[in-house]
Length: 120
Image (cartoon, rainbow, N blue to C red; front, side, top):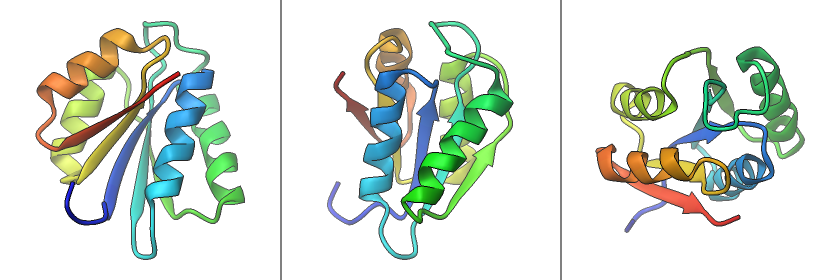
């Protein structure tokens, strides 16, 4: 990635790996950046309901003063991330590797932008 990411999508599932992905997206977000959070609540070891996951992500990002929007989309986590990345024209998708190995690998294969897979 040559330039700073201005439009970042992070997949958040409430796990430790998901929290590290959220923190990485916050670290990468600079002035004028937008972070979009997609709750990954269906399958693959999701840790909660979408609304609860989005509230948790909102609390973490507010503490870091990161401007964000929260996507209330359900379905297959890979499809949610890949389709959201296309629709929002994001520069970067950030996902945790931990319990989401299937998701992170598939997103890396299918996304039309750069993908950062945060190690557990």
